[in-house]
Amino acid sequence: MKRKEVRELIQKTKEELMSKLQGLKKDIEKMNVEKGARKLQNTATIGQKKKDIARILTVLKQKELAIT
Image 1 (cartoon, rainbow, N blue to C red):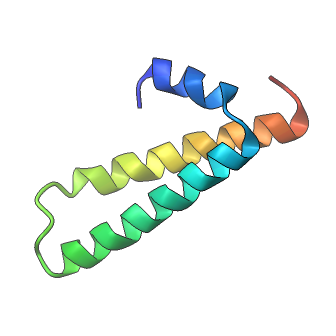
Image 2: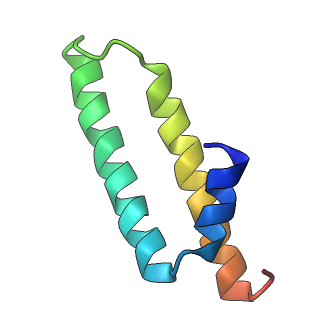
């Protein structure tokens, strides 16, 4: 995720962030199944998605604490 995309995350509402978070979690689940079946070509994308999830959770926590 690029810096520009992170800035866009900060401007999204809590509901939008939660829906994006759920989508990423579903993607990781699908990728893990594909990885087990040896159909996933690039396993590094799983790590990238996990980092995206962490970024979203960080933004959500900042909004909860009203730091931003």
